[in-house]
Picture 1 (cartoon, helix red, strand yellow):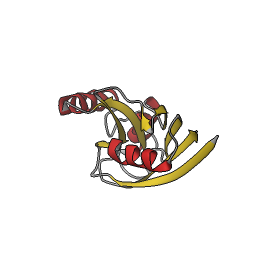
Picture 2 (picture 1 turned 180 degrees about the vertical axis):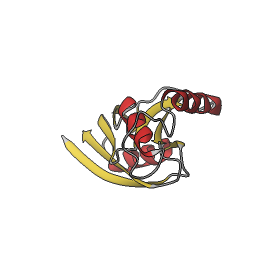
Picture 3 (picture 1 turned 45 degrees about the horizontal axis):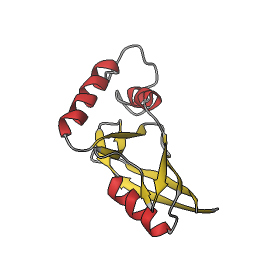
Picture 4 (picture 1 turned 90 degrees about the horizontal axis):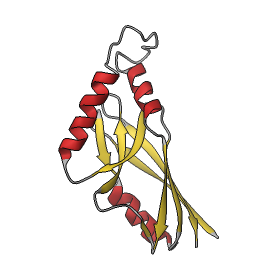
Length: 139
């Protein structure tokens, strides 16, 4: 067994999904590990990771509209507002989604389906510099 690790720095434009699939696929290929398990982990509490459709942008827009309805900014229920009205909603959105993904790797490529992509989901309204850790274990 071998392992490889790297950190991607992703500048987000603000709330929404940023596709990471090409960067992740390039890194997996360059690792020299053909078969294994890839862990993708975001090091933040107000952003998350998703595997989602990457062909039709209306899927991403619909997902954002759903989360906006489910966890609206400025919700009176929330006490934590240290960084603004979108602060606690961003934490809730992160808790409802995922901060880590596990993806099988075969033949030096993530085994994603035809329409699947790996996305960083920024839950804050303004852009941030986010760190995404990649760890690959295999042969």
